[in-house]
Image (cartoon, rainbow, N blue to C red; front, side):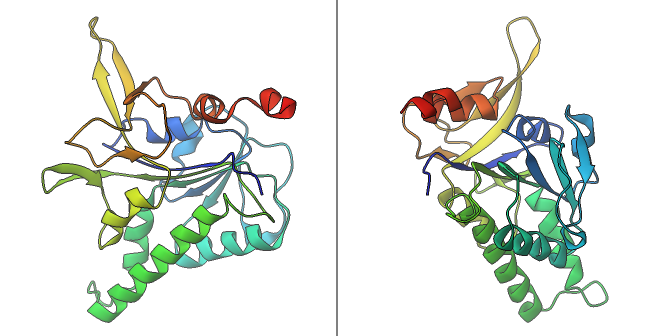
Length: 237
């Protein structure tokens, strides 16, 4: 089992560039896509893949699994744990929308009873941790797992936009919980900043030593290389 993997939550306002950031992860990338194909605007050779129909075809950079129900997530997880696969990174885009879709699955005439709501949240949490743990798996290891979410100002902090206890659990279940922001520089040019520490206004944190509080113009592949070294450096170890 390799230990050169990273798990992350990235929350931020709509159109802050969370999907664009996720697309800088090392590929091939598997996207659990509940955002109606937001990945289609990022560079790379893409294909829609349905795990129930067999192995992913070779030669693509981004594989999008449309998520319309819990069954789509469960089917992807089952495939990944029972078969060899090419994926280096797994992205949930976005966890906020996936939870909303799952809630609709449990509605009865627009109402979710407490028992159904509790079952839905439990299933959601189990799946998140199962996908996170694929980064540690000796059978089907991946190098990067990220959960993208909206953000919500709650109790004086910007927190991942989720419902239930998971909103407090998420930051502690991953290596980095980050807030993606867009700020104008001195020339008025928008620049992306990934806040990973040093802000009381944002629910963020990192267990990775040595990172700057804000990563400007962030790139996931570069971040992994900074933390663990490039593939060439790892081969030389």
